[in-house]
Length: 376
Image 1 (spheres, rainbow, N blue to C red):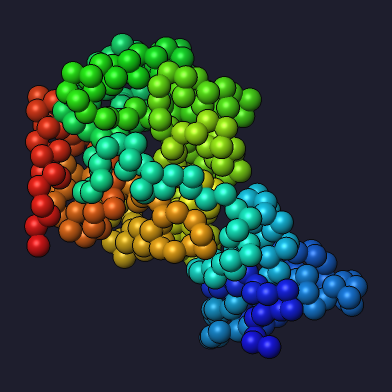
Image 2: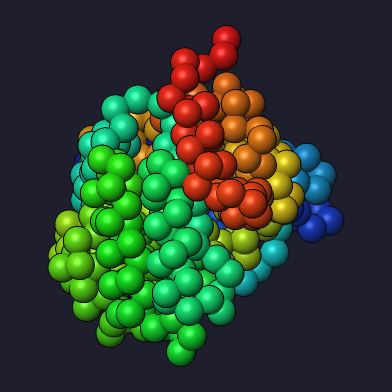
């Protein structure tokens, strides 16, 4: 039987990078990690019948005096199709240790089949936006503090300029300056009027993130108002709530990365392509917003490309999801990023578009650039 397999089929294989204390052995550290994530007992206290199957199988891939890479193969039944438990198994208790980084995951099809994944994915979001090819253009409504009528006026100008996706800024919640219900109604009406005038198909995406008791109500209000897509922050609302919102409302969902930076340490945490590329996608996001290289956040191009590749790569039977490049994308560099990331990409603009004197004309110019054949 191949190493890392069991009679029940393929295991969930997780590669960790571990920092080692002086004279600490890689295998001992990895076996302690495996127990911490499962039985949470010293080996001597684990019943013999459980020792070989519950804590996971450890394999040392490489080891040096201060660091090692190991693989721990877990039984996928330990996840039980439960997204919170999946995150708990991968990085729960050990998140409170130090020097533990999840670098790669090999997902068994048996486990993937129990997780929700995108309901629409790239192809479905393209159909909603009426864009069969080319990158999609997205813009954010900001700043926080504007009244609903001002946000709606901004949304209307962006839609008349041909922006494909007009989304709430993720900080727009239910503040008194722009209550959710009024903001939703005004912005969706403004976008619908613009579409009627231009023949366009711009989508308005309200931010649904808020108290747990309001999520499904907000999603239902958005759908009733005519929205076909929405914004949600998976780590703020919970990974499992993303799929629940999508299933209950039928809305396509863009996931925002708020709070995820705390998980992405280079020495302790999870690799960005696993959080944004795998976990957000498995939770049900049809597109995932994350910071692009060269913007306000310190992510390199290789990391950002790895996220895009994971979002679009085969993952069991799940649909691919859009990478949504944000975090300070320059409107003047869309051609470059199109060449780097390809056509199945959403380009999210904030200040570099909103700061233009004639916003509608600037948006229309960018839209025309994207409609032209890409430069070789």
